[in-house]
Image 1 (cartoon, rainbow, N blue to C red):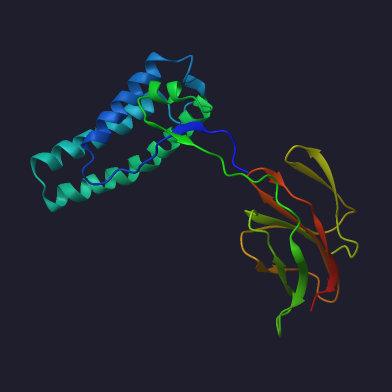
Image 2 (tube, rainbow, N blue to C red):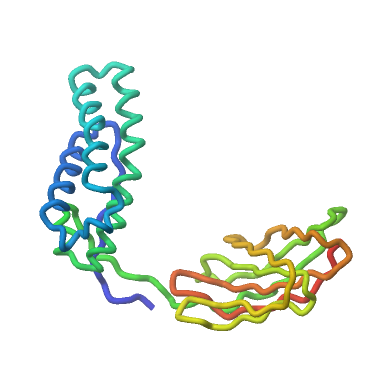
Length: 230
């Protein structure tokens, strides 16, 4: 079920024509400097000094390309754009966190906002048909497979050579703890419905627990049947 609308930063990459974005970087640096109680200095993804140092070669590349759009100046600007783009995205994420849905705070950073509606459907349901299968003629390897629910972002598979599998306990809203005897533990995160799982112990049984997750947290866990490692 969709949640209550809230405001988020309108994010965009910059391309070869980087002039307007250079102005935006100047504005952001200025706004961060003028509003240290909103955009906490110790929480910034880059210090104000570092942002200024990043801006200098970026601005120089823009000016040089505007004056002479030679191939050399174009390549220099492309290199600078490649450096600055991820900087902008870190800034966008930081401002989103500081704003906590407030359009006023986003605009205070010199950025545009859009109304976002969460499409979260809550924590995922248990995955289906979780199992280990043999891989023909492959030793020390089993195939983990499952049927996922559409609301699942991925699956955390905790596998162990202990035949009894693993016991899990809930520690918090999105935290789970593992209770297990001593043994070899392999932690694997999958975003697909199947993957190979290696074991160092041929001739022993591999057990495991599948835990689906999404942005809302972990869903119910499923213990896989212990399966002999070839």
